Image: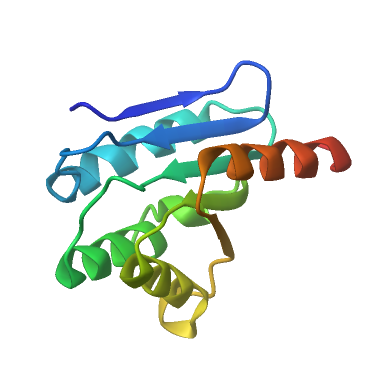
Length: 133
């Protein structure tokens, strides 16, 4: 478990980061449960910021992760404390898969993506400053 998951002290942002070489596909359920526990502990809606630039997933893993995150008894991307889901991602195939989350198949989950962490953080902080959280 080399990934990190924590709430930023200065912003309503929960950050997930997976370093290069980490196989998170085998940990989807564990990661999802940790995210839900952290989201449950929040008193206001937060941005869920997922940096998956170094994650290499096959199509099967992408579909399994999308299903787990959007359907079933505890779909993390539908948690009531999520204000918005923001991804940092550069892989073209993964970007296309991410866009599929907005389809009816996955419940039309609204997500945005950026190619760099600084852009994603700026977006979240700008949006947080204009929202009544």
